Amino acid sequence: MKPRLLPDSVLGRTALVLVAALLLSALAAVALFSAQRQEALTAIGGRNAAERVGGFVTISEQIPPELRQATLRNLDTPRFRVGWGIAPVVTENETFGLAGYVRDVLEKGLEGRQVLISTRPGPLGGPATGLSGRGGMHSHGGGPGHIAPPALRISVRLADGSWLNVLAPFDHGDSLWRPRFVLPLLLALVLVTTVALLAVRMATSPFARFAAAAERLGVDVTAPPMEEHGPREVRQAAQAFNIMQSRVARFVQDRTQMLAAISHDLKTPITRLRLRAEFVDDDEQRAKMLADLNEMEAMISATLAFARDDATSEPRLRMDLAAMVQGMVEDLEDLGTDCAYSGPQSLVVEARPAALKRAIANLVDNAVKYGGGARLTLAEGDAEVELTVDDDGPGIPEGDFERVFAPFVRLEASRSRDTGGSGLGLAVARAAIRAHGGDIRLANRPEGGLRVTVGLPKG
Picture 1 (cartoon, rainbow, N blue to C red):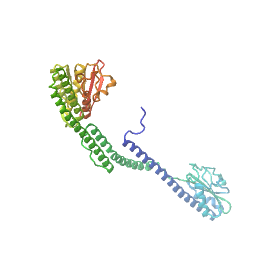
Picture 2: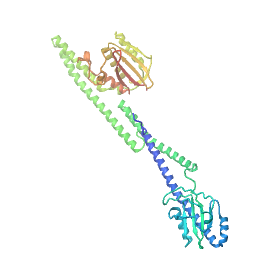
Picture 3: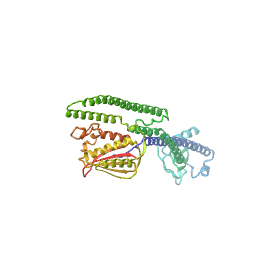
Picture 4: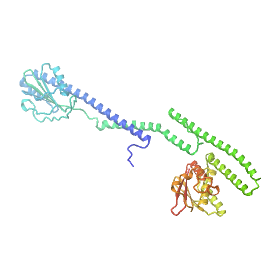
C-alpha cells in the first residue's frame, strides 16, 4: 500500500491547502517588508553618514592644517572614526549601491571635491591616512543595488590636496526574525488559520449529511427526506436529493401495484382452471393438473412477495431477537426436525419483526431441507448482532456464493418446486436483511456443511 501524502478527507485537504497558502503568504509578506525596510534604513543611514562627513569637511577646511589632526581626534568615536592625512584610505572607488548613493549625496553638497567610497573591507592605511588600530570592518555581501554593508570607508579630498578619511560602521537595524517580530506574526497566523478552519468545517459539514441520507435511502426508500437548510447551493443539492428519493419511492410503489394487479389477474384464471380440473375423469391427469396449478400459484405468490419487498414498509420496533429465534427452533423441534439454538436468552434489537422473521425462516428452511438440520447461534458484537445458521449438507461451491442470491436461481439439478424450491428464498431473505442495514455471508465449514451468517446493526 502506497503511503498517503494528502489527507483522506475534504476537510483535511482544504485545511492543508489553506494553511500552506497562509504560511507562504505570510513568509512572502515578511520577506517583502524586510527588503523594503532594509532599503529605507540603508537610505536613512547613508544620508546621515553623508551629512556627518560633509560637516567634518567643513570643519577641516575652516581650521589651520596644524590643528586638524587634534580637532578631528576629538570628534573621533568608536563607531565613527575620523582621520586626516596625505593619502586616502579608499583605493578602489565604488559607484553603485550604498557607496554610490552616499557618494552622490556628498558630491552634491561638496561641489568640486573628489569623493572616494568603498564598502569592501580594507587596510586603514596607518599614519598616512590618519587612521590606525583595528577597523572591525566585515561585509555581508550583496549584489548591485543591494544596500547591506556593515561599514563605509570614505575619503574626501580637501582644497589643499590632503584627505579626510572616515570609517563609519553601518547598522542595519534589528532582524525581523527576532522573537519580538516573529511571535506576533505567529499569533496572527494561528488566529487566522483557526477562523479559516472553522469556516472550512462549516462549508464541508453538509457532505456528512448527504452521506447519511444516501445510506438511509439505500436501506429504506421511505426514509425521511433531508432537511433543506444551509447555503443556497446546499439547499439546492438537498432539494434535488429529496426529489430523487421521492421518484425512487414512487417507482417502487408503482412496481408493487403493477405486480399486485398482475398477481390478482393471474390468480383468477388459475382458480377457474382448478375448478375445471376437478371435473376431469382421469384421476392421474387431474392430479398432475392440480399439481401444476398449485406450483403456478405458489410461484406467483413468491414472486409477488419478492417484488413487494414490504420489509421497508413495516415500522421498526424494539423486539427480542433471541426470543423470536428460540420460538422458531422450538416449533421445528415439535415437528421432529433436527434443530438447536445456542446464545443469550434475551437480545433486544430494533427491527421489522415480520420481515426479519420471514428472512430467518427462509434460511432455516434451506438448512433443514438441504442440510438435514439447522443449528442457530446468536452472538452480540461491538457494532452488530450475528446469527449463524449451520447445517451438515453438501455446502455450496464458492463460485456460486453470489449467484444463489439471484432470483429464481436453484443449484439443485431438479427443477421441481418440491425439491428445488422457487429460487426466491435467499433473494427474499437478503433483501429483507439489507433493508435492516445488515447483510448475509456464506461460507463452507471445514467439517462439512454450509454456514450462513446474518449481520444486523445493533441500533
